[in-house]
Image 1 (tube, rainbow, N blue to C red):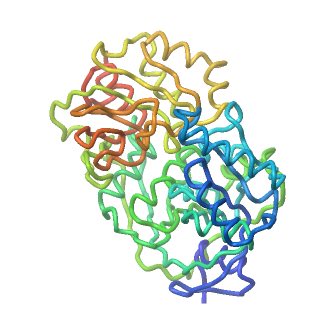
Image 2: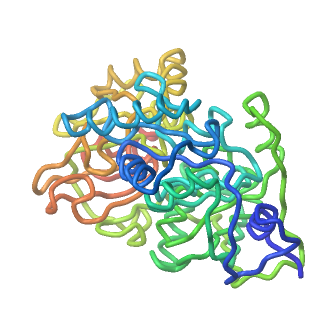
Length: 422
């Protein structure tokens, strides 16, 4: 029986020649991580269950990235718990504020997650790392506690849906638009506990930032993981970052898929997900006059340097609308520094934006941009559920950095074409 890339990775981590969708297996873990929201419960359970030492001090990673820099006393206590546990356990990879970035961007950047890995994280967007050709999936805090003790976890092998993207992307159409369009097509449960394998000529032309964006939002379709086969682009990204050996896996031509979906995206326009679901997508030309109060450019979905560069290109020489606040959130200190060196931060500041340190912040309604009653935001984040970014009567529209930047200038949701023509 031929296997998909996901099945091959899972088989290699459970000591079997092959696995198939629906089977329950126990696998060895390469990386297990948690953040300041999810790690405290995991640490509590670790101690309740008699855990003495984590299974591997280098494979357990703790990142206080959600409510940091500490937004209040409770957040400070959560982060202190992580720091003390990391110190007690001599955990190698604990990242304090100033070194920490948004986990799903920082870990690939540091070479801590690699092709062929089996990665478990206490955050639903752990699937981001699938862009490297790894199996990466989010689990609960109690699962993390058990994994920190044993270095193993049980999984049901997901069946795979293959998505093939053909054609050539139009100007201003990005990976964010591809994944929003896909989720709009299949729905928020369209890939429930399935593997979403992204492929085709369009995917092969995407940068790693674009690939991370695609895999990041696989969970918004209910997927267990998103994954892209490694290629030369992947190898160039990990070169110089890798701190250990890694393996490259590819789907076999005869691999069995639950479904194969093909899209010709040549005519695709920038997409916007209307509240309250990421699947409620429309092309930018289908929207009416939607005035906004806030724009957020950043987060684990679109906080890469490439995303900031796109936004800065539109904002250069322009001003943020007088009734709009624009919040820029570089995903890691390195991205922040590169944006500083390349002059992007100056562009943002001169336009009237505010720049945040790396944090999840407003994405989950935590801090650094919480919405009030009736306020409307455009965000490059990944979820727009009711109350996601603040008040239950606020609204969040999901879009690419290009659409977000253009909208910040006009004070209403608009196409970047309108700005580039002016």
